[in-house]
Length: 275
Image (cartoon, rainbow, N blue to C red):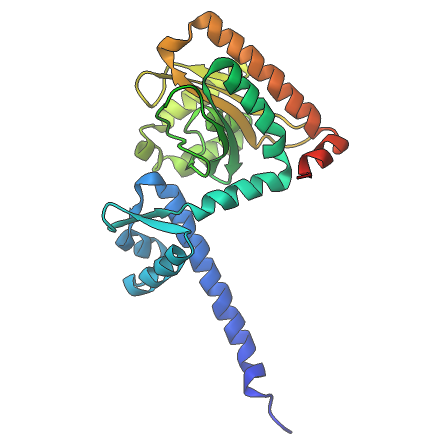
């Protein structure tokens, strides 16, 4: 009885090796995402993945060639690269959400001059999938499109977390607790924001993680679906008095209600997918 050709017998091993490599790359990207804009050292990545430094270096080098990873601080640290920004935007477009929300962000920014964001949940993280810049430059933890932070950090991210079942909120807080200090926050601070958003139906606070800024975040609640997105704004606290903030929040509610209505309409959602 003849034996199988060598290439046939080697296929399962090759497939297993490919899956293992993919798992390593996904794990590597996950660690880089959790590290944020400051990046992370190769040695820490290697320990987290339980890989040798040389193997981790080869993976990073390959991802860097594709623009998925870039170096910071003279090459000593690594972070997610600009190519992933495009992928984040494409993922948001895939659901139609970014196309539905973009006009709302444009109107809010145009009327107020403030920068607005569309934030979407991704597991234990929140990602900026769209941003409309206002009339002045403002520092932001969320940064630009593709910016990633632990779920609960930032107004939109906290509004999303506050909309989850309580057991899930506790699980997210416990899982992200070691990461919050890297973004200037704490479990106690995130919990206060979540409780405020639950009580008021939105988050509006001067207790920003960046001195001098105030925040407003409002979750998007698609009928019959879990909350995974929010619209948010960061602004210089002294620019808007309480009356102006109430007006801005009212306009946000109007725009979010329109988005929710569109998400409930198959015809509107179909139009959002069109170029």
